[in-house]
Amino acid sequence: MARKNYNSKRLNKIIFSSIFLLIVATLAILVYINILDFEKEKTVVFASNASNLTEERFVKIYVPAVDNEGKGVATILKVGIKRGDGKILVDINNILFWIDTQQSIQTAKKVAQDITKVDLSKFDLVYSLENLNASVVGGPSAGAALTIATIAAIENKTLNPKVMITGTINPDGTIGAVGGIIPKAQAAKEVGATMLLVPVGQGTQINYVPEEKCEKIEFFTFCTIIYKKKVEDVGKSVGIKVVEVKDVIDALKYFYSEF
Image: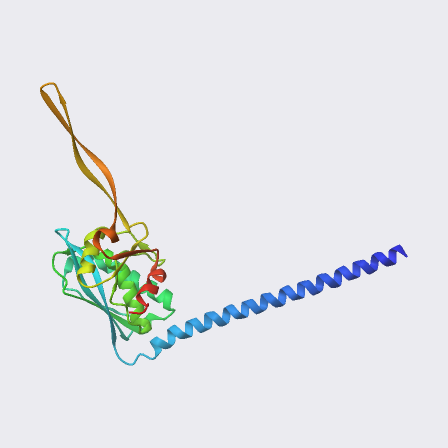
């Protein structure tokens, strides 16, 4: 009798375990199917924007930069896309700026392709800079803007003209640190921008301000210069909203927001 009860309990456990495993397996399959459907839908959306391309289209974005005197300036970057065979066409008169920007353009193309899932070997990309002063330096800091504009051209999106960005672009889509944040913020404000996107950690600037300290000893006065650390909030200092962004995906939500 005891053995019969034992076998009955064992059978119940086996049945319960089988039902549980079947439920888990079914849920796993449903989740997997949903993920595949989501990825398929996302890819189709990006591809359809590019596949409908019948003529060359351009996207404009303001790019903040710094000249060789440390003054902030803003130039207009145009990125176009047209049917082709994967070429990169460039119209940049400033040779030094072009040399510094070559790698950024290649990286921007790679990141844009990774994000949009569009095969850019079937399209040519056209890059041009307007009003680029010969004294402008720091081409790599335009990397983030190059990437944003490339993605917008592929997706046929209009960028918010009140938003600007500075930062290098890394192959994984993250945005790297740059110099001249304050003069770039000033340049952005001067051309009407209300928001400047900067790399993580660069919304504030650390400056060391010299301060003279003198001490009189008998008939002599001894003075020394000490440097005090000063943390400056770029946004408050310039009068523009400064937002730190870690990568291109993070930045796109600001450029695609309502005007």
